[in-house]
Length: 300
Image (cartoon, rainbow, N blue to C red):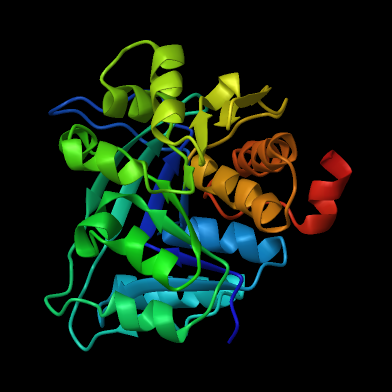
């Protein structure tokens, strides 16, 4: 299949607890009003892109365990292509429990990497695409030279970090960012990478490190800001009733990348991302409420 965008990163079975009275304390129990089981990780970006009509390939791994089988079923329901997913004959349970409140959420995640590394270079060479989106540190750890490999295969590259306190402080990350086409962190991630508590300073430092690239700083309910070659664009958050913020940043990425591969200006890319990210919060599970292209156009 000829893909437009490849999404690279681990898959998780997301258990999302909502309608919680408070965060649990040690030795005590709280009861959630609702529970949603959904695909997480890289699948959120892929599903949101698919709903916009993008031909998307998902580079990930699944095992023989019940959680992996459940994820396969959920991917089928979303209509996602699974050609590039490696299926293993051993258990590979990868799960995230999300305690979600309308304003924010907390996670407990279990991840297991297959012992056999993936031949990412051959995969990228064999499956053409216009763009590669890298989902987080776990993908970077598996293929540290992923940016170079994608560029050699003729693809532009974007990165959404995710939170990893140790990884965010690595000097090698700052150097790698200079080679990206699009860097898409949250405000707190960007500040951690750039070594400052001042978001404006962090954005300026990142933009200076990527003179030909795009820096996108996502700031939740305060919207998002992007910089490219001295041009700065900003959008306010979408006025929606928030239910669950799990995966909102991933859905934002999908909207932004849809506009990017279609050659739209920076401000339009930001608006597309803002709509996808905002609507994703109106239901539990990052991919569930992501808009179709028709819905996107109505909001635009």
